[in-house]
Image (tube, rainbow, N blue to C red):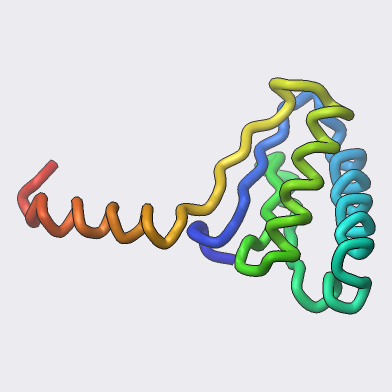
Length: 110
C-alpha cells in the first residue's frame, strides 16, 4: 500500500489493539452488506502494524474507502474522540497541486 492510497489510523495507547482489529472486522462485515462478501474479500486490503499502533486501510477501491469510513465511525463510538488520528490519502487534484508547487519552486527552494 502506498501512502497516497492508504488511510493511516493511529490509535492512542488507551485503545486495545485486539479490540480495534475486531472493530475493523466488523467494518468488513458491514461493507459486505453493501457490496457482497466476495467483492469485499477481493477489493479490500488492510494491515495492522502493532509496533506503531496503526491500522492501514487500502483506499484505492470504493469498498476500501467504505471500510475506512465505517471503521472510523465505529471506532469513534467505541473508543471515544481523541482515541485515534486519521490521515487520508491525497486526492489526485491535491497531488497535482503539490507537484506543480514543487516544480514551480525550483530545485533550490527550501
